[in-house]
Length: 151
Length: 187
Image 1 (cartoon, each protein chain N blue to C red):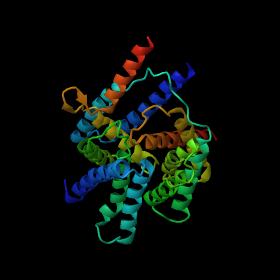
Image 2: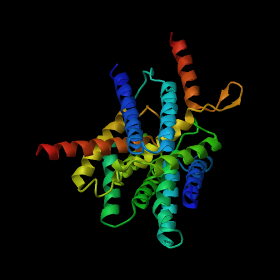
Image 3: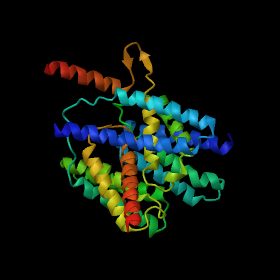
């Protein structure tokens, strides 16, 4: 793995966490937080096109924008910064290996982000005994209790 | 009853988009053992998450039909910014998302407008499609129409999961590509 790939992996993780912080801690809303990250990185690349190597200049905005979709996750589903960062890194790995069949297809970044997030969600991290950070498990518990009440 | 079927159908469509995306990687990179192993591990973990997701909910609601118009609006504006103004696709989609995200602040009481940025942002992903795939506005109209219908049907499926909008846009663009391909073969 060369330095460019390492920078992209790092950028993926940082963008995902940064979007999540903007969205939840600074209450900017998911759409604005993600769009701000995308605009910031693409304007940076537009202003300084020679600052980074050509490979990074081409791929950095795509990685940061795609990873920002991971950060759009609701705090009810996932609220662990570490896991969001890991999702961003997983997204970058998927992005770097995306099939050439889907080159230029809109929504490819979003699909990769969704897959990365769902993959990370499947790893149930137990903070304390019985307290799961996995949002889907909590959701399922709520649904079950509702179903029982109805019965 | 119909809503339950809509929920199951939309859930299956999203799963198909994900599996298709991963299958293409697996097919293309089958010589690379590391990538193949990573994709297979990802597939297993994905299936674990799908199984955890509740499908039995009966209170599935649908998005307003006008959402399709917002998706179309986002897609066309992004596509014009990309093609006519020469902006990069990321900057175009980001600008559209950023400007639209301020609109609900002016109509705080209107619940319908509050959901508008999500729909327009979803359309912006459709508009990010490269000119080589989407040669004209007809393709973008078709793709954004399909994406809008998908968005209306999937209001509660995968709610709050990042990347859902992108997956829907991907589904819309892929279906539109498939339809136009079939038509071109037929003619």
